[in-house]
Length: 612
Image 1: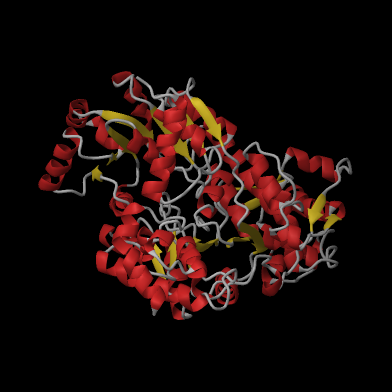
Image 2: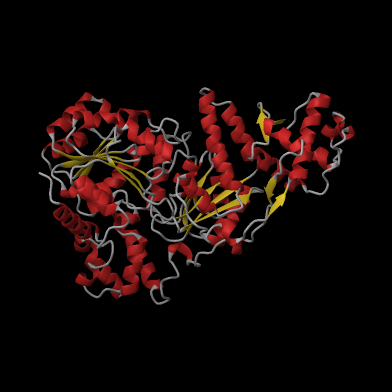
């Protein structure tokens, strides 16, 4: 029999306070939890850091039986279980990393009802032995984490997710909750369809992450630009740097290390042991920078990542949002920084043309890229553009680069006509195609070896573009590509006209462009300045040394236990403790994030640290 609504809410609130140490729910957590505790299905779209995990962890502790959590993150299951164990929650996992004895122990605990949560990888459900095991226990609910992995044309597709509709078919009475941090309306519909959740209650929270400052910079020397960002704004901070290729990852990590920034590489070309070791160091140590391909990051629950930087253009806004969302999970000011240039556009267009799949597939990829380019080239608020992509309207945020330093737009019609005319004449008069560099040299009247070799100095367009610099012409090319007024083809990224180019050449279409600006590093950030190592200036001067003592105690405790520091306490909890200096265990128990288990385990140690 389902519990009355009032009793379900009371039970959930008691668990929230007793186990997790919080007095109230955020956003629509309470409604979601009530739906699942009452036996209903739910599909939840909520941003990273929005508290998705509580939406199934609390029902797991209120309902009878064991919650089975389907997660693709085998490498992180141990950390997820460690974090729950620290809260006094009985959790375990089954995956391919375990030996026979470890599996047997967890299986026995599941059947005996001695677990609250059991984590499984989706591929485990292909094994009949796993299904028979689940039949032997009492299942409280199924939680399908990272549910966007079911989207076949998504950025994190996992084929094994396609079979998860069988959960409802085999266990129709067990409620299901599917959760993801990113989904457009189309992806949302695909998740619902593939997981047979059309009749579930759907909860869509705001995708806004107001603590993240979005900034997109013109790419000049990206590694040096990154180094300047880290030295001036994020000294001693943990962060993630994304690169497109493995080689770029290795070179960037080496460059940062040579310049005094502790950095580690992560990509599929490294052996599994090295990848695992680097991931564990990033999670457990303060102030490390992980340089990675997009193979890294999903499910990373490190709350104090202060920046996410991209040295190459992401393929889609979904990917960009998912990756930047790994910054600032604790709600503190954080930076999402992207270096973006002409080469990115050319490279991404080439990759789409040479990709596997039919024309429809390439059109989907091109649409994703077009939306990403529109975000890069906008003269409006980045956050407004980002949220609109996910179907949410907002007003200018005042905390992105285009709000802080509004870019100028200019009438680039004549410049566009000159560039397009150059491409046209190369093709019509010489039957030749070249990349951007040759067209720019022709416009600037440069008598390079290549220009004179092909006789391009005799073209009528030679030298007609000296009013712009090379950098400005490259921005013109990039923006024409972004607007679909120019295209690239072939292995060498040669420029070709599109149908829309004709309208510009015939003076039937105006072309508005964004004027590049160089923003001094000191003007880049609107958030309050912060002390090195993650201490926020919202702390009074007298509280800062207390906060640092607490962080030192936490680091030593985490190292002793072999768990990430955030498993002990989040920075936000330590900041509140440092500010309030609770004199007794009872007072400490009223601090956000201090539940009963942590109060019993660490309470006296914290009071002793405060008394130093």
